Length: 485
Image (cartoon, rainbow, N blue to C red; front, side, top):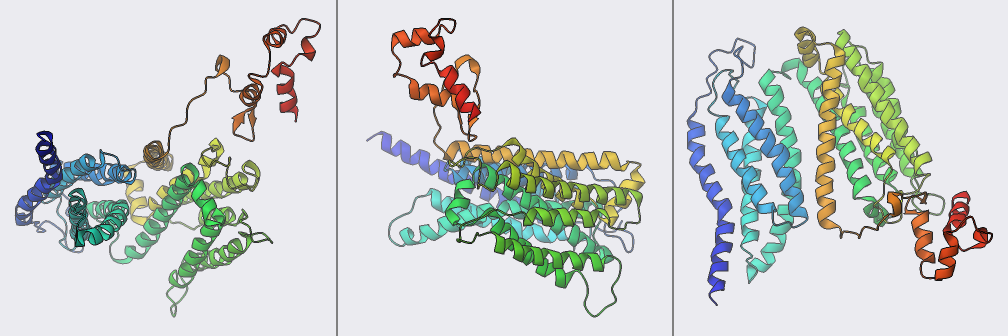
């Protein structure tokens, strides 16, 4: 009886902890709002002043990137697997986000226009976080009686949806922060920025989805009754329709790259429809096909030949095109030769081939290369003295970091949502040849013969030099036969 009040107090303290941070947020808001973002040093026609970014703003940048880009995604995954660390991690992320928000309104140095997109988007994303915290507190209170029992189900669904939406909003806000800090994507550059950042982010998202399906989504694909190329081709076709009618301002003269952009939109929806058709065989069963990989190959070839004014821009676009072409080629090889049109490496959906990680990673790299190839960015890099090799290597490094972080999150999810399988002791540390990419042949056959051999037979199997050694029921000859077959 004495332990029950203590448990209730502990539960209340835990559930009230996020409330304390909400109160801290409310306390910081007037202080942050009172800060005056002066724009007196901004020259006419510019969006930022020539002052350098001060230490306070740098701290704001790194804190927000860590809170929104690392801690919240980790907390999201922990919430999906119902880990007890979900609440503490999200509370820590919220605390850092509050601190970063306050620092963003207290900096000196570089000044920005009040109407910048990063500042405008801060309020909606903060409101989303606030609503997410309120839903989390409500769920933590475990109010399940009366009308709360009906409300709780919808709050739980909403909490899950918003939690998975936050990484996308965070990515968008970080991009807005980058272009705002540099004063990019204004006036006539808006259209090109939108094209590069939307398409580049789409390639990265495609790579992330392929990684998810490879590591933890193979069984889900099979349960849908469709091949993965059906979904890929459907999205490609939809995207192609959008590109066909948005890449050129209809009713005006065709200029610069309008022809190439519109033609790529046409090939995307035409190929996408073909891919949807080929995603089932004549009996209506799911069937793999080459179309999505071939679309990536054609798109990469087209982009590698895009005319550019600066040499570094031409080299960056060329490398983007080659990387996307490589993604398409390796995707075709994976489907046709590595998997041989099978849904995956094994029936259990847990095995994968090292080659299968190449196409997703190349999509990450393609996305970063394309996002880093806008006219203003290319002019900035050209003026810095950096050559295209160093710049491309930096972009590839960013792709590796995001690829690594995605794999870490998937590992956290997989380890906490899948029952652990017992490890089998390996004789002499060797696996031996694998049967259908799953069970080592040596282990499988020795397991089947274990207990069927008498002690005398076992001794005979260990004396290969004796006259009847070859006729003994040793696994050596059977392994050889198994490998030959």
